[in-house]
Length: 101
Image 1 (cartoon, rainbow, N blue to C red):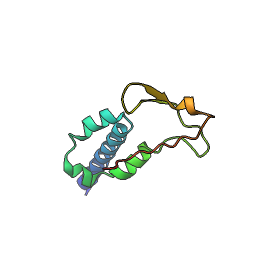
Image 2: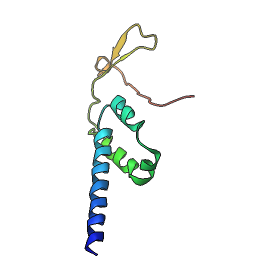
Image 3: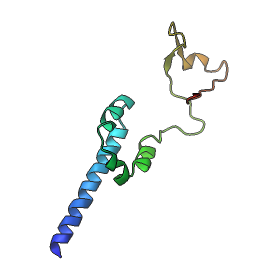
Image 4: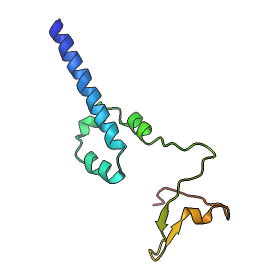
């Protein structure tokens, strides 16, 4: 009976370490995250709680009413850049993230 306790405890500890490692990777940049995730075996997606970990890692810290963080993006023709801060106080800005294909 004592052996089963050790086996169960070992499995629980390993599961916790794997979940912690997955969460740590999810906090990384998208490039680093994708490089790691392409090596994760398919069975891991069935065993680890990826969705709750992802929601935890990507929850963000902004609240309603907080100003949007500043960023700079290239224009569609790649000839110039646009800063979000340049629109502050002059006109509304709508940001849409998604795919239209």
